[in-house]
Length: 359
Image (tube, rainbow, N blue to C red; front, side, top):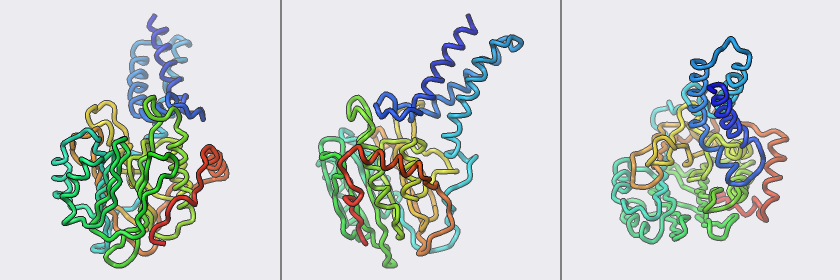
């Protein structure tokens, strides 16, 4: 009975582990990209229970043990880069002085009314740029209190959970709101003029997730990310992409985005910085991201305290270098390029529709 029970549990966890290997874009398949840490924890506990409860002298005991071990190793392969056991992808900023860019990203949750908590964090950390997701007219009224210190803004208030606002101390150039894939899901694209005169191309994204209440499939989200990736593929200037991507850092789609765009992830080798769900410690994963070109090294990255939303804010400070630094991200091969093109063909959108501000 014990052997059968452990086999059944192992089989279920193995199925959930292998399900995302499918290219099926249905939400109930793609959702299992998210809880890899939780599945790895369950597999580790199951492996321990199997070692304690099974008679290892019986050959049949090694079936669940072997399958559990293989699944645990597979899950670990995805999540280990987001631990301190991995080599850092982005080098720490070691040069004194120099130009820096500090960005605070916060999905505020439209019904949330604790704007005071977010405003207090902004005043405490003094970011150069604040971007909010899910911000509507009510949130815009609260955030406008920042304008004396953040005079450069892009405002797109919406009531559909996809409003966006950017408040910046630094001048913005060629700022544009774009609707890349879905007519009610915006993105913001702008150049940010640094004090030294150089312009950084910044893209703020919040594609809709695959879920039973949003999109039945991940197609729209994946295409939006890959449109931006393809647009940036040959960019030679400084670039930042940030926002709530409604995808985890270790998913196939986000990895493909990094490969095609050539952008770096400062969390690799440092930690997961799980930003969602703020109210459930046992169900958290990294949904809010900042990717950047090799013109930047990292001064700091931190998850900030609760602001009443289901997301924690994230704060990143980057040091700018006029020349690209020697930093190695993920490389795209022919199969990656073919997969990207295949996904892009699923929607009538063109990478040329993605604005290139400041160019």
